[in-house]
Amino acid sequence: MVMAAGASTRYGSAKQLARLPSGCTLVRHAAVTALETGLPVQMVIGSHGELVRAELVGLDIEIVDATEWWRGIGRSIAQGVDAVLARAAPSGLLLTLADLPQVTSEDLMRMADLHRQSPDRLLVSGFGDNRGPPCLFPADCLPALQALIGDDGARGIVKMNAARVVVVPLAAAGFDIDRPADLLKMPRT
Image (cartoon, rainbow, N blue to C red; front, side):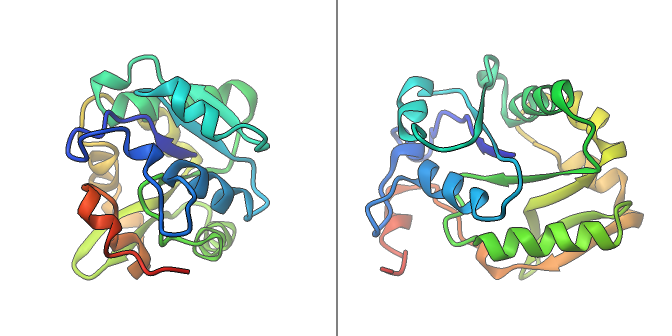
C-alpha cells in the first residue's frame, strides 16, 4: 500500500505531482517501484485526487480514494486497509510512502522476504537513529491500522508491538521529499 493522500502543506503544492530529476512524478515513481516487486499494489490518494489519479493511468494498481484524508495520514491508512481487507485476507501489509523516492523495489522485496521468514514480526525501516516507513505489519496488526486517525500514522502501533519489531536497515528511507528544495538533493539517474 502506497500512501499518496496528503495535502502537502510543507511542500506548498501537490507534492505527489513533483517531478524527480528523471522527469517522473513522485506518485508515478512510487507506483512503478511498487509494481516492480510483483506484489499487488494499492495507491491511497486523497488531496489533489483527480490530478494524482491522472498520473497513474495505465498502471495495474488499485486506487483507493481516502475520502477523509483531511483527518490525517492515520485515517487515510485506515481507509486503505479497509479496502485491502474487503478483497483479501493478507498475511501482512507492506506500507510505504510516495515521497520516499530512493526506496527501491529491491528494498520492498527484502521486507517482503523477511516477512515470509517471520510472518509474526513487525518490520520497520531503520535509517540512522530514526525508524519509519516502509513498514510491514503482520495480519494481526491490521485491525489496529483500521482504527487509526490523526497525523501520527502508525507510530503507536509500532510502539505497542515493540517486543516483536525488527528494524531493517534502509538508508534510502531516510530521504523524503517535504519541500521543493529536497528535489535539488536528488541524484540524477
